[in-house]
Length: 382
Image 1: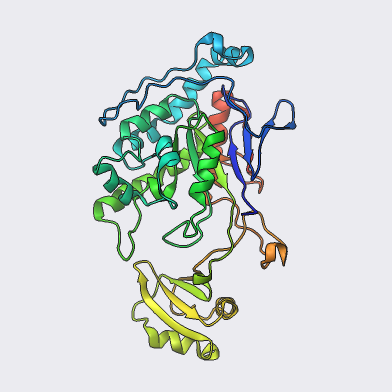
Image 2: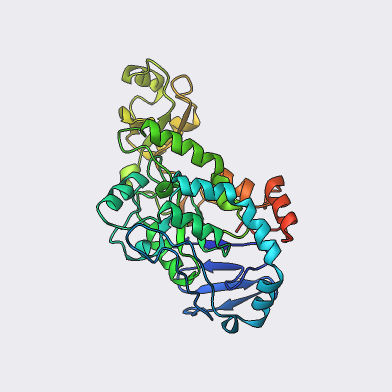
């Protein structure tokens, strides 16, 4: 994998004891210090201190909400001064997370347990309902709702909030690379003890099915506060995966039709494809509950059908079933692929995590929160 790039982004004013920004690469870890503005290579660096934490120590489902840091003598002098002088700042930031903590306690959003991510035999991350079924069988992939709220309230950014590109609808990682990247990152980012990943943290439509009514209500409530996961000044560390693996062969020539209109059938698809009839192969309009799939003999034919707006009268949207669009944009032929303008961060991280993003988008809530808390209102988009 040649494009791997996972970034951990935090506010300009550091909260001890971890660094501002960590860039995890293929062979080594580079740390960026905003105070010194220089790169330091640290391939196998150990943290200067290890924090003791009593939350989640029990395995019987009960949560202990007490969080404790290292002894004062173990904290570097500069960090100790910050922790002693900034109590009111951290308290103000914690107050901004009260709504998110309540959502965690209700169980609308669940967090992946660090130990499970590192030790699970899975090569691909399961969706939430599968994880909860395994939880009922005695496995511990997720923090309990109380554990998640307690960890957020510690205010030490020990929750990782992942923003990442979905490679296909219904499954963000059909290739199976993201869990490996997360595991490598956690070995470096030792302060992170739980992770928010939308696919595992929110209820999803199961294959060939839909969420239950109760799951759908929880999903809607979670969407209402999900931006706060990325915007939290002291509760979370934002992680960004930009990796776009090459398209697997089984996705060649496939287009997804979203929001199919009533009465659309295979005959309507064939009629719309009259100019591409020799390259049309098949269609499955019930491929998933939320979209159908049209297959062509070549991927180039599928791209021509998409560019020609062939299905505009049949559905609300069309895209390839495997999304190869890059994060930051690329030129034609770069990496053996067509050029594109990039997709950038998805809306919640871009609008809420960054008071001012690289695209000039301002977020009054996050900017005001940082200002009221005495933090520098500047984040890196990566």
